[in-house]
Image 1: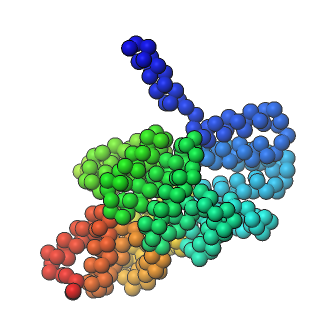
Image 2 (image 1 turned 45 degrees about the horizontal axis):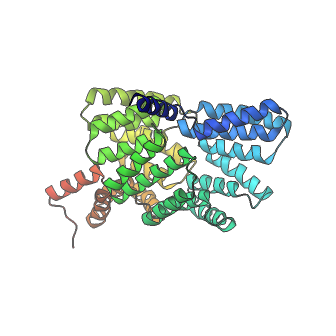
Image 3 (image 1 turned 180 degrees about the vertical axis):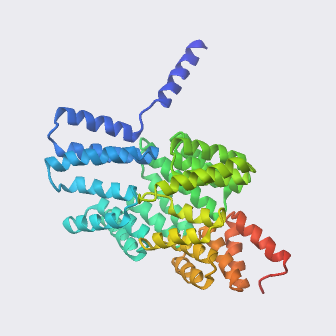
Length: 411
């Protein structure tokens, strides 16, 4: 019995301290550089490993390490293709979407059959709201190499944006089927996305199962912690959500993560803690305002929903809409316009977002609220019922308020 327990203890300890895929890639690339320090491709491998580690941990310090490593690669081999590909990855990671699109477009002209470059074209165009170009690039990925994981993931996200949630889930499942067991962070990321899709479709049980699976594959994964917290909020288990989001913020202390924690604290009735977190969020977000990787959307929603400062919300929203036109930026801009009393302009931008087909519950709640202010009760009820079916608490409350006031949609 003692021998068995000792073996289990060693096994569990080994799992707890096992290197992640990115950590192993860092170790391998570092060893190769030590043996051949003038070989530029090894620096490219190390830079990409650092970029992957940034995604694993949400620690932006790894982006800095990746950039420093790329400088060495480019010094050894100026303008080498693989280094510039990693530059594009880093630009995307820092939310420098316009720069990423420019870099990826140049690389695509240089090598028009490179799969990764098409992936970067998808990512940059999605974030900028160029959906037709994103779909075209994703289709190229699947035409060049049918069934490749990177192409399936992009196709899944585009399907979600266009309202095809079942198709999005199918693509993510196909990607998971083709992902190796050793790629633990990639698999956890896919399970997290599937959890999100199940939640948006209204299936809390399946959403919970996927999120828990993600955390079992990659313990304490920051994306999965956030997704499981969203499931707990939908289950009205607010204290549990606070615990998960506090753990996430401790591991990845970014402003947008603190905003999610503050909202959960408010739902849990932790008013003092929520107020302190909101104050800290605003200060942290404003301190990061000179950066492109910031929390502009959350800052807009904070000023509208919690601070009651429509003018500051609109100021941030106008700055954001000037650089990107994706559906979520259109939604945030519309919400700021509505808070400022310009419901006609708000509706115009909201309709642009809705025309893509997105079924995000928060966006649908905003659409319903704007339609209600414009006295379009039938349309408002449609959006709000859709959002409520996807576990939007705000939509449920507004529907109850409509019913209590005798304002109902016609049959």
